[in-house]
Amino acid sequence: MKVLQEGNIKSCIFLILKFLERSGYLSLNLIHQVKIFLSPVDTPIGKVAMNICYDVRFPELGLIHRKNGAEILTYPSAFTVPTGLAHWETLLRARAIETQSYVIAPAQTGSHNPKRSSYGHAMIVDPWGAVIGQASDTVDICYGEINLDYLQKVRQNQPVFEHRRKDIYTLVNNEQQQLSNNEDFMFADIKISKNHVFYRSKYTFAFVNIRPIVKGHVLISPIRYVKRLGDLTDEETCDIFLVTKKIQTTLEKYLNSTACTISCQDGVDAGQSVEHVHIHILPRKKDDFGDTPDAIYNEIHQHDKDGRAGRSDEEMCREADEFRKLFYPS
Figure 1: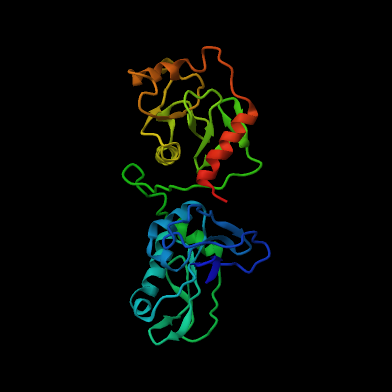
Figure 2: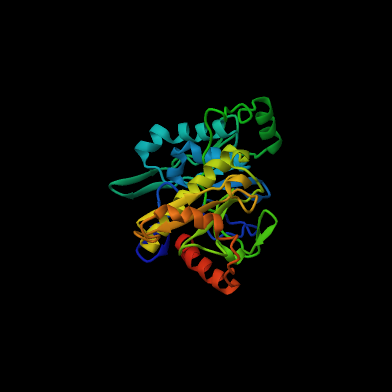
């Protein structure tokens, strides 16, 4: 345990490896304030995805890590004796089998007070679900060989990820990612400065508008160049609409709006002026367009065609910074 903020104890994991340039990782499922999902990390022993304790009960998390390239899942834990006896080995072996990955699970042990004892039994499980290393319920060290050639053999002999029915079910990863200080984006052939972007996920980015119709009029677009909505992959489709919902609700609350217009001009004949899928979000208030609230659609169609001047870079940077703080508070 590490105290990250006064009065706020959060579970953390630290890899004691000089090549890992991260300070820590928070349990996703136990701490709802955690918004950033860390991708697997390249290490000398393979791609490691970091999880903590209670996370082991959520198979989707491990499956998303596997989808993102993980070869090793870690679950340092502090199970109580009753839950450890009932679930510990079963959960770890299940996560290894379904992801075809190595699972490494350090475990706290010992009696802390008359009402609390930890189970121990740190464990290493291979991609076939075999326990290849296990400690006792005392202070101990266990060892296991990480063989990535064996891992690839397991995945090739039983290619379960290739057999998943994406037409029936899919993994929806509502993943907010950190913004990079040196990453610009392309909106068709238009370069969008990183300073104008205030949110990104794995497949989607959101940026301020050069000619906004109302305060908070922003654009959401797939990172990949895609002309039409129907050309998005299922993952991109889920992602762009989840991001749209998140940004809509956040901006509505921040701007004290009572409604929102969400518009996608899908194709040139629908009024699309930039041939790259994009969604307009326009926070609304009562009587903002007088007695005809639908007049905003004509504004959307005309706002980049009537010769009005665009905003300055300084103004756009200032607004992007304002909105960025809503999603990436310091």
